[in-house]
Image (cartoon, rainbow, N blue to C red; front, side, top):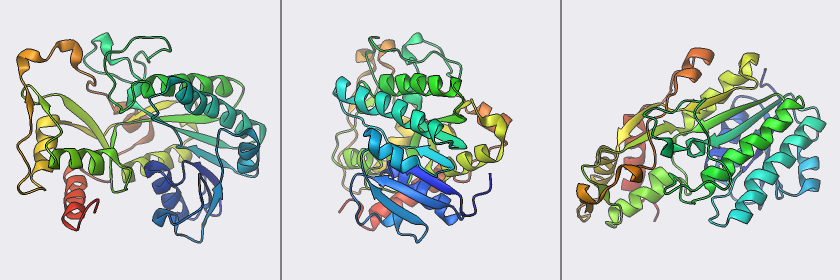
Length: 316
């Protein structure tokens, strides 16, 4: 799919992932319509090729207007609300409505941004790939890798809702993201979690050997671009996982950014149950094998970028 002047709609346009994808596609020559809650000063959207459109993607009238004339829809909007009803309204019903509108409008491709949190990590498997069981509505999950206990479940339900539209002919591809590194005020893993480390609020469990699958925001844009070049990606789901780091190493790297930060609290290993592990290793082989993907940014580069940002003042 050629990107020159390609009309592209990005939902969640002012969010971390959405804004970076909008910026990346605009830089590649696309004509981007960024759906935002409020038009305003969003630095990542500062491009003559990006038009901000205010609206809620859950609203049917907004969605019909937003998808009109768009060849590509990138759906990056979601909520991490702890309220199940609100999460169902936004993540599930909103995705279903957007997908149906995109199909009716004749959009040529639909990219759905999902998460590794959709997997049922409590099955006890040692490695999760794209065919592993997903969480189900009504299931009881002791832990969630996301801030909201219902985020993973409703994102899994969103994928099922999208699947119904795919069965009706919508040419869609799903990307399940690992922990996303990169700079943005709403980035959990490079802004919010380091702030907890700085303040002594992040505890390691036992020896801190739990793993964190990760990727970088630039790698995600690269993966999406590859999928658009290859029609065989239609109907497929891909884990975007560039590696795994232990929480001990990840937290230790962040701790080094803050001279004078208190030591990391430790939860004794005797108090950690095997069922307490809330995320397990996830495979990223399908993306590499089918699309020829290779990451553009490494873990070391991501952490160096974040360290420099914090040294410049960070959240201040």
